[in-house]
Image (cartoon, rainbow, N blue to C red):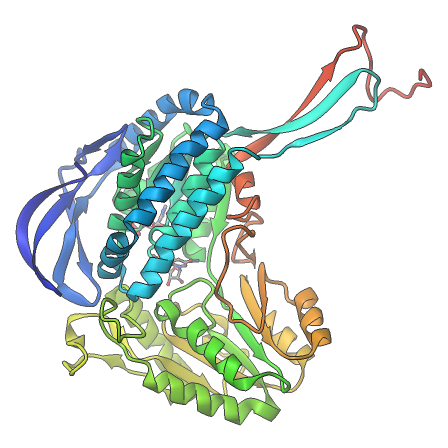
Length: 517
Ligand code: NDP
């Protein structure tokens, strides 16, 4: 059992039993050897205790790695189409339980129900995409330079994959990483974000129900220092895949360097929507609203910068500010609500800090700007970490609010005079995740598509909206050259082996300058 009931607690929708959730190691649900737990509370309603979770330590992590290491031989040798059958089953279970999982995720993390359903849907999509790869996983066959010799390349798994995941996509990101790792023949140990352990436990429950062999997928909850760092040191972990902040990503990179662990980093973003004078302004406002305030702005692809041509600037700012003010903020399980809380008090404080920085820098606050702290007809905001959707106008590209990742419901609108200026502003940040252009001019669209140095680019759509069958990731301080999702996601969890089969019956020497043909 993933959890045991402890005591009843008051929740946003009544009285509910509180549960103590376990780690999932070697196919069993187990307590940490620390015998300590930590609490996880609803960010919209701090009275609502989601549950208590194992405050694990290095020895718990090492036990999970040992289990994954032991399971690796069997899993590696399970034919990929058979591995795929487990993933199809997991996808079906997630589909069946989508609403239930999404509801718990909204409680755990705060984003609105439609968005948490989208999060689960991404996990479902990735389960089926990865499962399909079980019958493809193409390598290359190619002519040999010698007669009677066959040449090909095949993917091989790496071993134990260590996954460290964030809280903003609590099941989608673990699924993106986990399913790609599993289909390529690796076993997995995952450390979920301490703010969202339940979502990953629900993923492990689906794996257990699907009959995944013991030790193939393991979950250890606990802190970055206590569980994450030991994972980086453990010699049996062959590859680390991390999504989170650039600062932690840099530390992880350094910790992995001495042992040359394979490493995939997916980090911050400061994404831009560029609106040209020929754009459909209403469409661009729709996109900006969704891009900036979806998931309360807590997406690595959030549209936290908007560059608007001077000819449509005033109209755009007026419409965006008006629409932002009308967004309904509250508890994400209420279908009338557009935007939930920030995930934690820490994130709320970061947002407040940046609002002050923006004002001090001289940007013009045209919507929002305040934390919500009172009880209203909509919700008792004092119980959570709510902030108004906030729009700054007249922002200069070098202001901190236009350069630094805020990760909250704040966007910075800048005035530009041309596409060239928009592209220069767009590329002027340290991150390179996502960018988008609103225009009706195909020449402008293709120019920006070529010149934006970001891993994702959209035309007439906001900076968010990635689909699982294309590579996902970014340049510069956003990533370290790898991508997840799509076929590219398999590269993180596999190595190429080139194979030569000589059926000539004689010694043939490649790379020798010879005329013997
Ligand atoms: P972090 O980078 O701190 O955390 C991400 C994951 O790394 C969590 O599982 C965390 O564990 C773990 N971790 C933290 N420190 C270490 C460590 N030293 N070694 C190994 N693992 C570690 O992100 P936060 O959740 O604190 O968010 C902070 C900022 O990161 C945000 O404001 C945003 O800018 C950015 N971010 C970007 C995301 C993206 O999608 N690119 C996603 C989330 C955050 P634990 O939860 O236990 O601390």
